[in-house]
Length: 127
Image 1 (cartoon, one colour):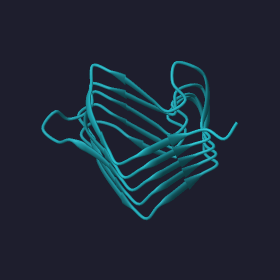
Image 2 (cartoon, rainbow, N blue to C red; image 1 turned 90 degrees about the horizontal axis):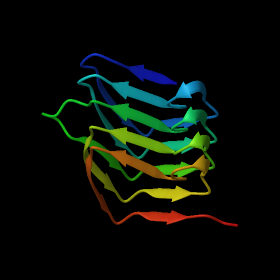
Image 3 (cartoon, rainbow, N blue to C red; image 1 turned 120 degrees about the horizontal axis):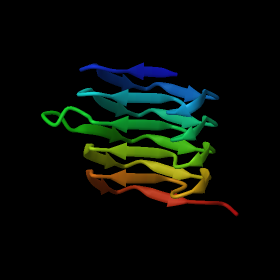
Image 4 (cartoon, rainbow, N blue to C red; image 1 turned 180 degrees about the vertical axis):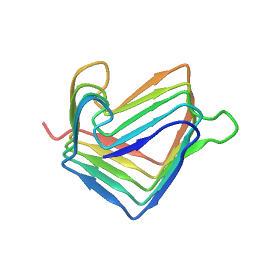
């Protein structure tokens, strides 16, 4: 699991985050307080957290948009949400969200006070 706080800059390319666990938020990636993240060709598989099994991001740096590009989110589990984005601005391009599970809110993306553009992405559940 990656924990980024206080103006951190996280850039991951071709990284697999699999089987991570967080008791509270951000099973694989937790990014807060004026930080930013850029993810390219990453996989998030079978991660777990109470909130945001794959990514929890809050109060990101407003001068830099986050990017999620060509990533796979598969079989992540949470009480609520696969991605939780609060006060976040950015884009999700060419990504796949498949077979994620959450009891509350969204099995994929929850947005709060955020502006997010999603392009050429797929969301599906094999049930």
